[in-house]
Image (cartoon, rainbow, N blue to C red; front, side, top):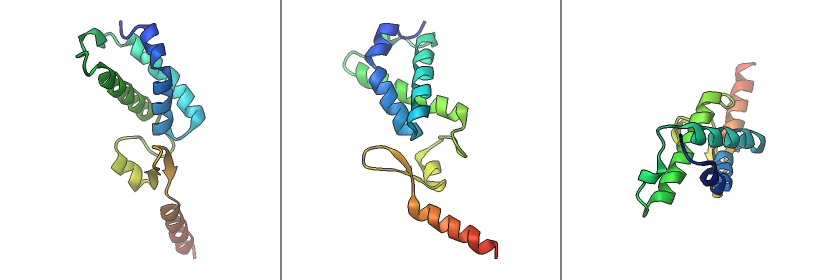
Length: 120
């Protein structure tokens, strides 16, 4: 069995925050967080007792991040999947200083004008 439910609940806020950061959508983030918690619980290969105590917290955070990205990839959020930050930038998204995913208004306006110009 994966992480114990007690340990998962200690990281619930972190799981939700990371889900919001990578999804950019509060409602979706709640769904993703629940699925990630379930996956952490069910992952039989995950044995946090083997993590180095000095880096255990960072390793758990990285595990959570990876699970969030896997869930988002499996759901194909919007028109894109979360493969990399470069891919998000190509699709017209950027991450603000708070770590939130948002649309790049200049790129979207440019694309809109290009599309409008093509219709004439």
